[in-house]
Each structure stands twice: as C-alpha cells, then as structure tokens.
Image (cartoon, rainbow, N blue to C red; front, side):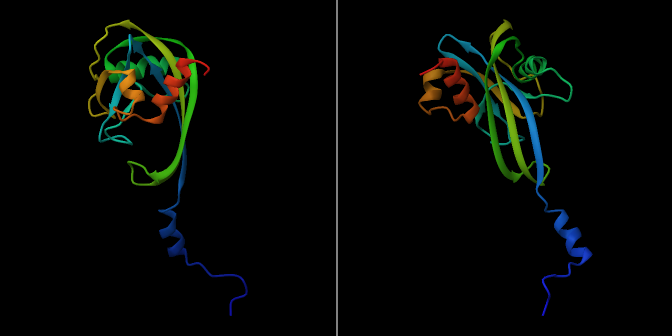
Amino acid sequence: MLAGRVPVDALVREALAGHAVVRHQRLSAYALLRRDDRVLLTRVSARGAHPGAWTLPGGGVEHGEDPAAALVREVGEETGLEVAPAGLLTVHDTHFTGTAPSGRTEDFHGVHLVYAATLTSGDEPAVAEEDGTTDEAAWHPVTDVLDGEVGVLDVVLAALRADAGPA
C-alpha cells in the first residue's frame, strides 16, 4: 500500500508538460468608427480565433507601444484607413481556455481598450494586411448588428452600448 505518495516517472512528467495550460494575457486597442447609421467592422479570417465573425478594427498593443498609437497602426493595417482616437469609450475583456493557433492549450485573457475614433483620411475600407487575421472590412448598418443579422463578437455590442450612453 502506498503511504500518500505516488511515484511519478520523469517520462510521464515530460509528456504531461506538453499539455500544460499556458496563461496568456493580451492587450488590444479597437476603434468604434461610425458613419451615419453604420459601423465599420472587420471580418476575422481563417487564421484568427472565431473565423467569419465580425469585430471592430484594431488589434494587439506591442510591448512599450502607446495604445492609441497601436489603434492607429492596426486600423491602417486592417482597413487602409487613417483614424484619430477621440477618447477611451470602454474596456471589455474575454476569458477562455482553448487551443491556440500554435496548438498549445492556453488560458487566454484578452483585455480590449475600445476607443471612439474619427476618420482622418478615406472612407472606403480595403484590407491592407496580407495573410493576417482580417480578410474583409465593411460598413454595416447598426440596426443589422443589433438585430443579430451580422455575426459579431461581444466587443462590438459592448462598444455600441457604451457609445449609446447610460440607459
């Protein structure tokens, strides 16, 4: 009979190490851009999490990068448009455990800084980044988004609620 200790072979430990859940936190900056009764959205490509879903233009903040500068850079890459942040609108987050594109299991926590933004150049989006996580950018009627006719990620609804002000 064992006295409360189970011997663990080094090979078993090594094999299990490859299945360890890796904690990963990512800070991102997103833009809520509105034109009349429409909102600018980007579609997640097959390379990203939630392929086919629509989200706000934006993405990861690099280490040491100002979030507002990251917003301008990311919106340019994803839509070809130039924007100016007009102020922090809301902070949204998502947390889940799943398989990352690398194949490892991650406990992922995404923190999303959502800025109201204005266009400073152009108005028709065109994806500028090749082989990225965005495969389309387009203006969508806000009513279609709110009615569920456009499949969006939660951050879009959170941004629209925040932009509407207090209930």
